[in-house]
Image (cartoon, rainbow, N blue to C red):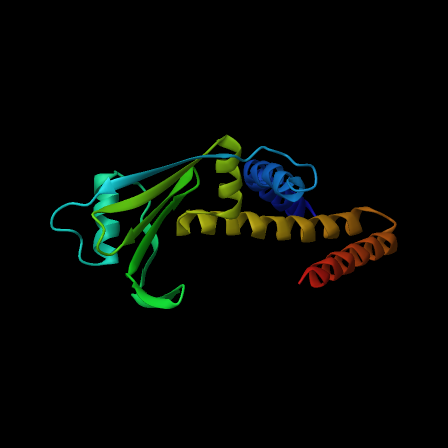
Length: 199
């Protein structure tokens, strides 16, 4: 019993700070549509940047040039190339040039680059999040490294351990064990049912 109480306390202390972050941002995410909370906002801007000569030869080279010239911190993600293809234009068919794109995403914002092969410029759209937008992206793990994902996994694990150790402590220290077991079982079934209904 003594060991269980100490373990429960230390696990709770570990998850306290991250629990506040995830709890607060979880409430914002959960109610943003219904309550029309304008907390997470992004300031957007678009520019056209001239390409160097010679121009980058592939999407990866374009992404590397953008990262270097714009001094972007995050690594490029979703670097894509769409091949040239014919498209309908009225009663004619014309060839749409190849399109390259690259995204740079971090919790504080994102940069999306689009280049139509043959142009002398690349279109870059930047979205800069406010504090609430940054916190929401931290909650969702947007643009985060493997280290952050593993840290969040420790929080999820601590919540599971807190739940289990809390039920065991309650059952060992309270005379109404049957009531506690019934409440725990009903809440588990309700949570499982809601999760299945949402899928």
